[in-house]
Figure 1 (cartoon, rainbow, N blue to C red):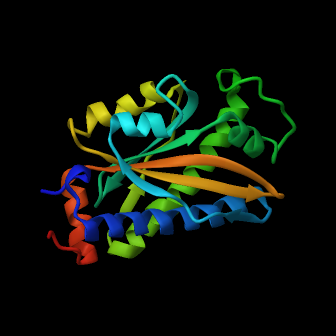
Figure 2 (cartoon, rainbow, N blue to C red):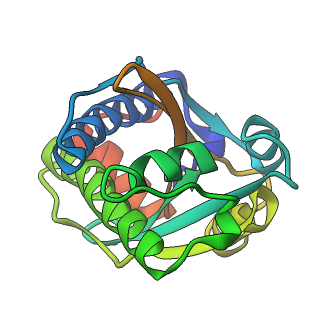
Length: 206
């Protein structure tokens, strides 16, 4: 059974292409939500272990907002939006003016706006998976956690990923009104779902 820690080159290319397509669709969905043009640089897509993911995202103690979206039905797993203050502030200020002191001070309206963003962009990733595989892919309600990178990463790495295994990390660098803002999407599929994904894509083990 495949896992992110044992992918061959062809499987890595396939999973990275899924990340690219999902990010592009998320960019389009974000543009509709914000009612303005949103451009995106070609995303960097990596398959990383816990320590490398922590370092890549700014260190275990780096404070962020993690938004968990469960993947359900024909594929099972999790997506995580890694949201930093500039990104959260830009999304919120589309709908009302607010200066964020820090992510720990989000109020109910702020979290509602960010949950809607996560719903729409996660749905775009899920639709990409469904279209590519002809599977039914659904998502759960957003669960927000304002914490450190290390605390957020413990959720997928302790519940779904065994020692030595890895996850998919997607860079999302958006340009909105000539200003660039950055976020990340993490995608973790459980082993049977990852195998089903490759089977549907016609990607075989080496």
